[in-house]
Image (tube, rainbow, N blue to C red; front, side, top):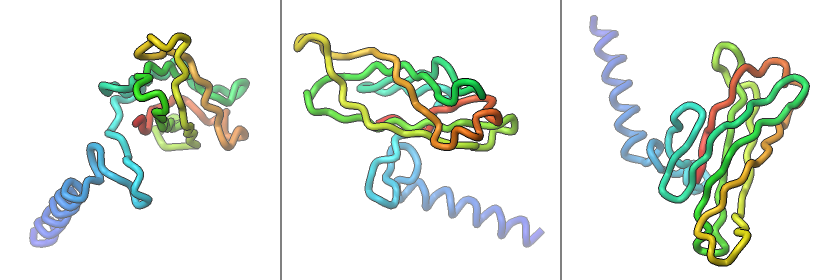
Length: 138
């Protein structure tokens, strides 16, 4: 019983530490870059950017397609998007990330919507991929 209580207290301490240091819900990674927020499975939805997985990678096509809707203000705004490719057990097989600078068709456009291809870095593992999940978007 003492071991279980000790384990539970350790788990509570780790969660509290992560919350206090900002590792959850919009904190920063070790490199000082914001980590975004936890995903809702296959999409992210924030005030300034929405990302939705349209199509996941397959053995024949080792890239995912995501639909990005993003604010274009300010004009030099950059977004960082990350995607995980998962196997049948939900384990990460590979990941992809990209930097996006929205380019509106017209200066009056306040947001853009476009489909973006996110290729796997290890294309040889494409046959293992069963689903895709957004990792971050900020």
